[in-house]
Length: 368
Image 1 (cartoon, one colour):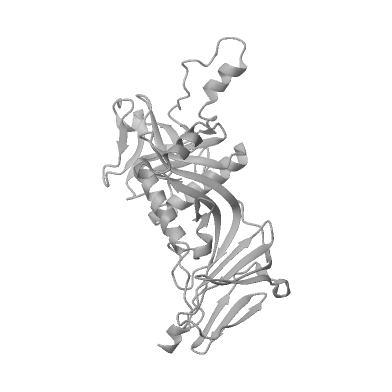
Image 2: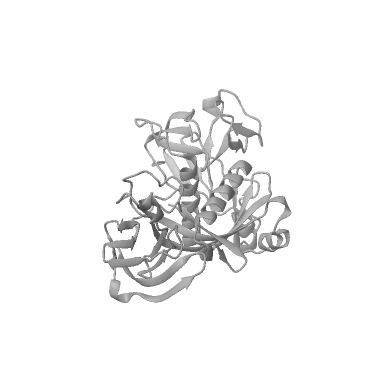
């Protein structure tokens, strides 16, 4: 029990581009106890009369102890200090616009929630990104003659996969054996989750958060739902921010309702949690699903500001964002919008108190 009393909550965020780190050492469970902190390039060591906590940094991350500065005590959080850090550049992301949907490969589409096969052994000869959702309106603005694309929507052929901001368009006519009705939901037969919706009698839209595409010779990857949603949304946001220089998004459901206002703050964060390196160490539960002993404690993440819009909250702000052309809408199934809001809320609640809000927005990290 003496060891348990010595546990200290730790938060460490490394900014790769800035080569800086923010370290927050929470107060020991027993207030008023003496706390000695030692910082080396590769580890942190915290000692109290009841025991110690050692945090070993992951490979590729080194702190510069001599650069420690900005030391301050924040009530409710503990000690804050900033220092320089050396971190390897983040690995290249696998674009969600190309995730396992490589041309010439025979692919299988699975329901992410239960593994039910939706499309089996489909050879994709063309995997192409769609233009922005309002491309048709832009053509009308730029053309001095009648729009040559008017009333000619982009629909994939049997061996095509067209990729939008948050969805795949595929031709399902040959798989279903009958013509589906347009504008109807596509529901998983096994788990009854909404996977997408029909766009026409031949074209079906699958949302990226609901479907996994893998080469047919492989097997269904069992990825925790929360982790998968975080990964997909984070990569979508990074891709869109980079390609379109937009950092504000409305997360809206297929029903047209706005559920979340989301602002990407940065995408170069490396969040480090303690490894279970001694009997008295404890993980800081910042990112869900990262509590397995012996697992890596470093997570690439994007830092976002958000405002929930459920139950008529932030109605005026949401209306303002919807009318702003610099804000990009991202459409998902309504149930997934609520899942994402829960993920953000739980993540926000796990942050040190001083980091949970910025201006009027709430703060959260999404793991990539």
